[in-house]
Image (tube, rainbow, N blue to C red; front, side, top):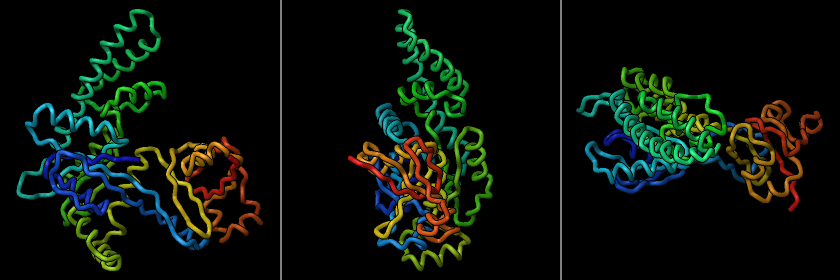
Length: 350
């Protein structure tokens, strides 16, 4: 799972990236910075309290700090920026909602970025449609399907709307969209980067960011990147004390990563034993065999069955032995649809 951070210059994007990943990236660069952050998951500690392991391993999220493009940049820089955005699974748009001596205009900043991405998609869509129309003259059915999708795409883009606002694309249509790398079809997480005095996001600009997300099929979280950077420098005990004093339950990586997972349609399953308790992200609706493949391709290839129970069963019965005795340990085949919170042992033979 790779999330690209974008934003206008001085929005706090790289400050947030550094805080999330523990990196020390420089402020401005023409190359992306890449970092990995563990996703806080209270369920891991809960599982470990019943099945004490040697180590606990959280799922991770990969962040890419995509170089910003100052207003008036040449076509080469803009093209490079767009190419970086096309490489990520989701876009995290950091929007300045704090006063640093310049006028704050969150809605306007979002409009500038979205307009750039919509125009880029419109160019791609028009070129692809011309090509598909030429191919369709021979009666190619695939080309006819592409034309129908590209016509719908162009209508949205010409109306100034990102492709993702249309939520009822069929799966074949989504495959066509993915084949063109259309940026505004990607899910977007808006981050309202607020001042320390507005952690609840009550300012008009923070509310404008949330409203934009709701109206365009995205999600939004409120974060103070400056505070997160300070927290990242502290020891764990001092960090907890500072969070409590600020009225916060956890650092921003928690709500931000969970929002990104929802945006990408991901859920978690777990493996648990005396060696490790570990979280594994998978696409919601994945089968048991696909979940096994998230661990290792050999498990998917040689899948026999999945012995599983839900976290709720562990909380209720306190141990795997008691779960088995209560008849709550299930033996599931390769077509079983995984539930968020399942704890699994995979049996396989290669």
